[in-house]
Length: 310
Image 1: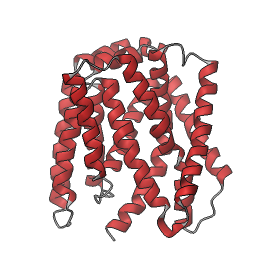
Image 2 (image 1 turned 60 degrees about the horizontal axis):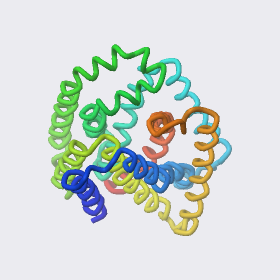
Image 3 (image 1 turned 30 degrees about the vertical axis):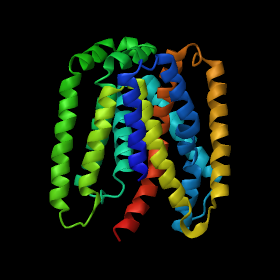
Image 4 (image 1 turned 30 degrees about the horizontal axis):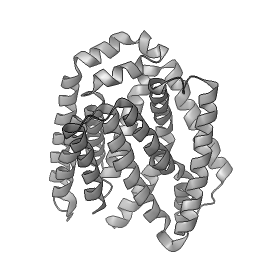
């Protein structure tokens, strides 16, 4: 039911964009920023609570200091890679983000085998390909905000010229991996087998027809972050260790810290110079946060899948 409601929100955005005066880029930016603050940041701020719950399930001692040290260390490491090896960093980010998006949308499937992991990655790659490649004329200026983007303009131009070929390859990979996955898992009784393809088709239709920023807002904020928070809350309430009040209070606390950190970093640089610069740096921030966040969520979804298929 929740996914139907979220898809309805996406369809409403598409309806407003197509049959009413198009939503201006400034209003799209306001919607995007509001969504990041209300849902995007909180779904990442819950990582420490998820890690606490996971450690408890494994009967391990949890140290907030050790967790935060490793978490921040990974962010810094990824930021360094972005600085010195931007092409490699972007490739790693695409793979990590694709897997994370796919795992969130397909967590109900048994995907711990190699065919399952390829199935998950290929799903996320199609999502990202439609958002980024189909709307590459909107993405390209964001790359060029950075010196590394200007230095790699040849690669960027090649991607622009071949974007639909890359998109087609990602689609072929998805349908091939999906066929192989269901062929190897035909014995599993899963009511989601048919419905997920319908949802996937609707998501792609929405993303294909919305502008890049509005489409990314729908998928990352409305769809991904909302579903993630819903799964996180369910996971945290397992064994009744966390009440709704504690979950809300803790997520609000860590979200406030994250927002304060973003503001402080932004005030020392050029993040708030204009809307385009803000979007570029926010996307960069999401990229460096992907690696540590993905690992925490992967451990959570592994335990959820183990419970579903045990």
